Image (cartoon, one colour):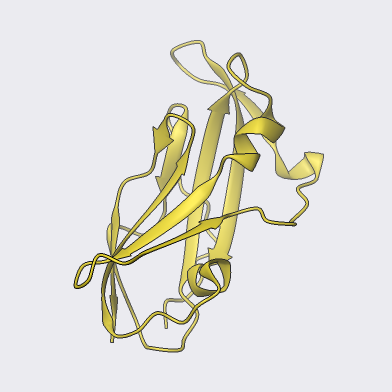
Length: 134
């Protein structure tokens, strides 16, 4: 099982960043915890608009079957979970840390296979995480 790190990844500019490296392993049927932080520019959309556009995609390398899910669904974020930050380039962004179980968000148990996982919102994309389910 991938253990939840409870450590918010560091973000240096607007975008989406995963914590914990680009390769993960997990056992079939176990939670796959993901930690990420997203920073969205305030001059392009409201924080609520960015958050509604936050999706996770998981694609099986073997058969290319994609799984997609909205990360927020009916989750409520409170103002104390959001942080306004001005980055070195002068852009002010709303920073949101998110911790989630990938399988729960996708609504499925992932079968033994190698998957590529990415989170996106508007023009922003996270790095691709390779996930090996044993």
